[in-house]
Length: 270
Image 1 (tube, helix red, strand yellow):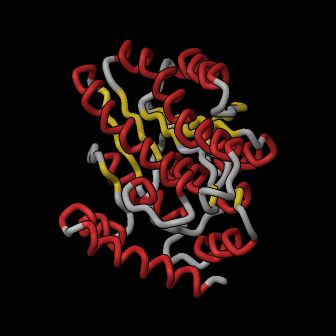
Image 2 (tube, rainbow, N blue to C red):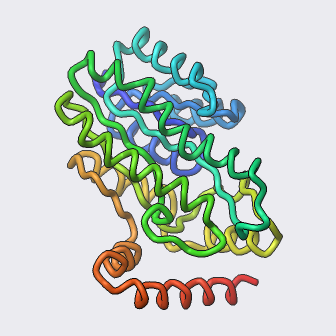
């Protein structure tokens, strides 16, 4: 039995499941946490059927007690954890005047505070162990910001900021931090998405379902980068190029590129 242990929130589908399967193939013990118990049971059965040592636990990242229960399970059953992947997330699209504050609170509670809760709950355990690794899943939307996505962009940018802070804060404890910033890839994120109108919902669904890379390919890139303890994990070269443009070019030039890109996206998927 491998001594390496990983916990993944949102581990029953999409990138979470792909990561669970990738680490299981490498011989890791995998605990998945998810709000969808039916999918979690299906994923667990697939992992165990493939020969993995795995478990599942009901986990709503809006509830600190659920994450604490996962930490207690890991300490009791496997003696701790080596990698914690704060992956659970949702999407939202719409103009600033159209999206309600209730929608903003919903996405902040999951995308941002879900990551904060995961890091807060597991840091004492990792400190006691003398080390570990947080992998926080953000998005290219945390680094480059398209219009009509302000809530999603804000939460993912905040995950990047939290991760940068923790990388410095926890370094002396032997705790590494990585932040994953993929662009669009084939996943089921659109299933729980909130949008101000059908065109935004349809555009996002099309971008996700027609993307060049799938969740399994993103999981492999994340697996390789985490093994190297990289901080920024940027899975799409084109996203990295635009991020470099934002950092190095005058803002007016960057803004022209982004407005043109947004216009092209909208015209393709109306």
